Length: 170
Image (cartoon, rainbow, N blue to C red; front, side, top):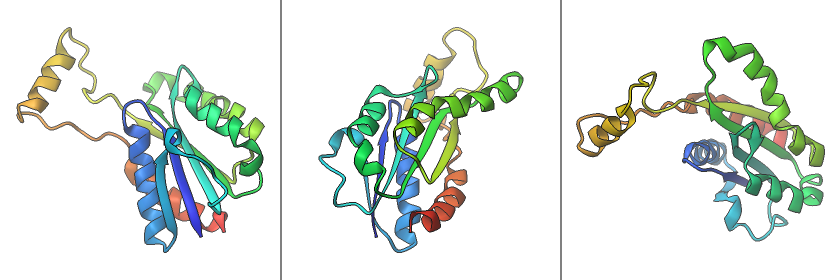
C-alpha cells in the first residue's frame, strides 16, 4: 500500500509527528511518502492519506484547510486520517481545552470523513519560566551548547496511534 503522510507546520512540531507516523508505517511494511502539503501535486497515486496540521487560534492552518478543500473528492474515496498538534493546556484549562479539540477539526470532518483522528500536544520549549528575557537566554544557552533544547512533543504517543491506524487504512 502506498501511503501519503502530509502536513502543514509552522514550528516543526507537526513535521516531527508526520515523520514519526511515516517511520512507524514504513516499519510495518508500507510504502510511505512524508511531505509538506505545499509540495504535493496530486493524490491519485496514493492508496491512503494521513494529513496533519498545527492548530493556531483554534483552527487548522489555512494551507491545511485549503489542501482538504482542494482534495475533498479524492479524500472521500480513500482511507483518510487526520492529526492535530497544539500547545498543551494548563491544568486549569484541561477539560475545556479537550472539549475544544473536536471543534478545531470539525471543518475538516465536514469536508472529508477520516477513519481516525489524533491530537498530539506540544509544550513551549522553555517550560514555565515567564521572566522577561528568559526565552532569549534559553536560546542563547542552546546555541552555546550550555543547555539542551527539550523535545516536549509527545512523540511516544504517536507510535500506538500509527499502529492502530495501520489496520484502519487497509
